[in-house]
Length: 183
View 1 (cartoon, rainbow, N blue to C red):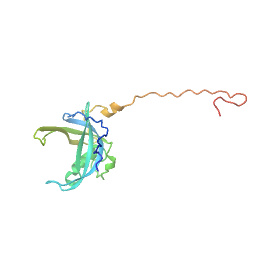
View 2: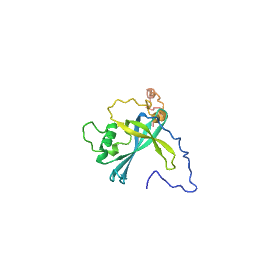
View 3: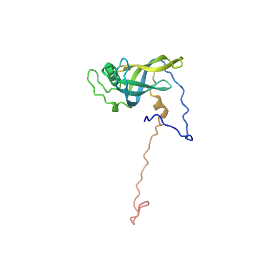
View 4: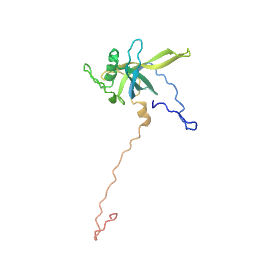
């Protein structure tokens, strides 16, 4: 069963009020891989059935962050995109083959180009969403629209306090060998 869905009982407590939809402007952004799920592509007119990595990527905007799910198909037709993704994370080196290690992907950071996709919703109205157009290799010099420090670090950064070692003083033992605080 999918961990993202859970049925509630009639008297269960709820608290999630949702969050406002954020649409980032087209541009280059820093990202962090939040999660990787293994899935299966059932096949289509252009692509045969194959394994698929459902990668949740957190894109760091100037004030907000958004999650984009990228479906990476594990077939030779999309080998270029898999290489581009692993190059962005620094897990693949230019010109060298790579054995994909999906366990090493969560938590990795990189840079990508995000665009605004316009589509038609089921009800016929126009919808917009962010999608990833390109992953940049780890060694490409790309200026991003992301803040210098990702939003999650700014929000949860703990204040640094200087720790001072307490001074220890030596006390001469009493004549009978008794020391205060000793047992």
